[in-house]
Figure 1: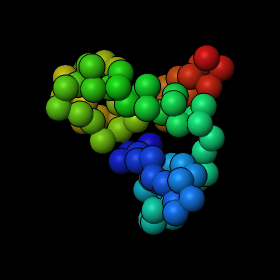
Figure 2 (figure 1 turned 90 degrees about the horizontal axis):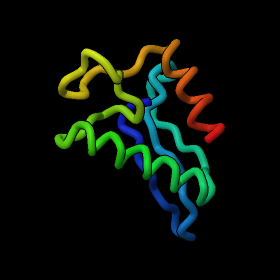
Figure 3 (figure 1 turned 30 degrees about the vertical axis):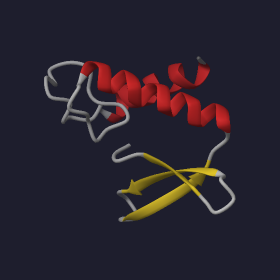
Figure 4 (figure 1 turned 180 degrees about the vertical axis):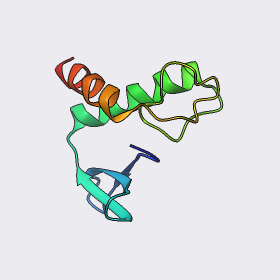
Length: 86
């Protein structure tokens, strides 16, 4: 997932905004407070490892000194399952 942002509507409800590469457009997904907190925590962990930031919510953990490479699809699915379970 690249360029993930949490945005709020006029009522203050949170949504996840991201680029849907397959559809070639931005997408919005409503999220609750728990998901918002977990995304924010993941973004913090990324910044701890890559202080200059990364455009990826899940950067590749190895051989990625500057955080510019995304996690592979296979690794992403496994990590996402662990992350959601946590």
